[in-house]
Image: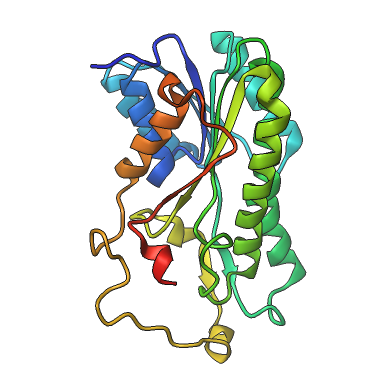
Length: 261
């Protein structure tokens, strides 16, 4: 097995399922020690055991990404355990409540923005002190939503958070280049994950819906949603030295789906 991440330490937020889980397992198979930074300890424990069963090392930090104190504490736990941080995969997020703007409550708006955008800020901010000496790679999970696609009605908060992640990632890439910390942003389209469990569609969506139909299918390349493992391959590439001249770049991984929108 390729050990391109031997002796490297990776922090994966939202690592208990979907893209985060697949990426954590992929990085671990290639030698990285994995911190699963997630609220859902039960699911994270399953991923930890899977990594260990394959001969890897993993630990879990119970962190609410919107809480700066807990994120900072979580990063320190990683360094206390392994002495370094080399890779940050800022992947944790929610779809949140889907509603027309006039019906979306300020509280639901805040929850989505705080989890997705503020959570990404906290993840990167509190990792920087531990990455400055050696450099490393930061990968942020944004989305086609808010960057190429604006037709998913009711997702104003989600799309805003994803557009914000894009801008933040580019600002961070330039600011952190002097420390040899690379920052890139991935934009998945439809991927087979369970993020739908963090989605609440309101009945009011019907009043703003504009039918959009693609009679030949809306996923041109493979005619089906992507798989988390396909995204994990991209994450591993961006985390590795093979991408050592790539930073501040967004990469769409959606089988050309967003080009139809």
